[in-house]
Length: 523
Image (cartoon, rainbow, N blue to C red; front, side, top):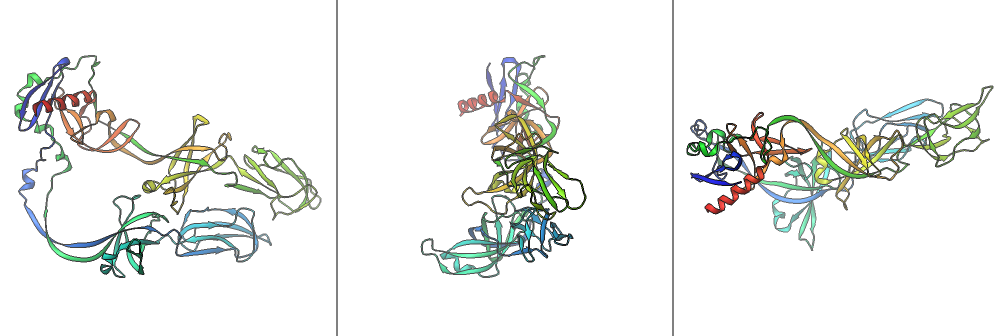
């Protein structure tokens, strides 16, 4: 198996792969991309643009919300249903919970504001009095950022100046802000001053405690900037097939490629195809403790408890008898059965004691539907949102996959781990997942139609991603490509290839190595 140097043409290298009849034409990737003559003839235009001057600052979103308000119980009663949970974003008219009053009336409490629930103080079965605080809602539309500005830059910063805020979690996205407070004191150690910025966060993307960068606009002036009306398209980043030097093509006898009929050689080719690309984010977590999702069991009427069939810690199956009570009046005894699978947490009364339809008889945790808590690190927060699907696995059951979805994302970044807690709801009909079990999750963060090639087809030449593309079925050319996502051994191509083109899918590494060897010999 040998390579032979054919000719150098304007700094480009032509190779021939002799053993097996493989041939390759290689070009210099350092060559500047060609601008079409039609585009170059259009010339340039002078434009006046505002040239901003910034002071760069670094800081964090405040740990605690600045604007919070409580939701109170309108009357005394018992919480019958909860429709939201902590860290859930809410809007105006979102149903929060339902309370049954002492008179038996049911009152549904709805939100009168946008925000995120940062405190929840009741659960199903909790007795409440008038003006009992049920939950706390924080305003997430506007967050407070605290930035450090060095002493030498203090004179440039004033109240009301615009600030462009960026976060690692949302690369390329800018959040608007304004300077609202300047500290009167300079820190003796850091020689910096605190600057408070009010940041617009209407989409509730930024989180409490998140690291952010800021650019404070301190001055703007006019300057002349020459901008080309037409710039080369991204397709001209790489040499195109028609740009193969004519002098190289004249050596056709050396560049001819004859693939064996059975195609069992070390070099294999494949067509560029479109397909579905699924991008997953791998996360680690645990199943929530048994008290994370609990249900209360109430009798239908007042009466006397006759018998208890279960004890705390017992595992319940759907429809299993748990209690029997005698309703008041000439009514037959009533049997209460488990409404879903679970584990008994507590028994609230004893046999022989009176019962009321307003007071719970027992509490059990729901194991048929579990909450799982995963950690998502700050740079990945921008990829996740409520409703995304999650595939969950456990080392205890490696052959099984549990399907779930994100139901809430914490509003606060943990300052030690620099991650947020994400709650995922998953089914557990067989009860295999246990409370506190370690889990691995794959969050489906994106799914789209894409141009896909094998990962093995992509190589690096001069620190650029390159594939070897067929020119005419017998000759191949290295071409630079722009890469996208990667999943299941496939790589997304954003630019540089077209559907149906043929490239080397396996064996390109050998060609690349020989190219480097010949380049060194020529040098």
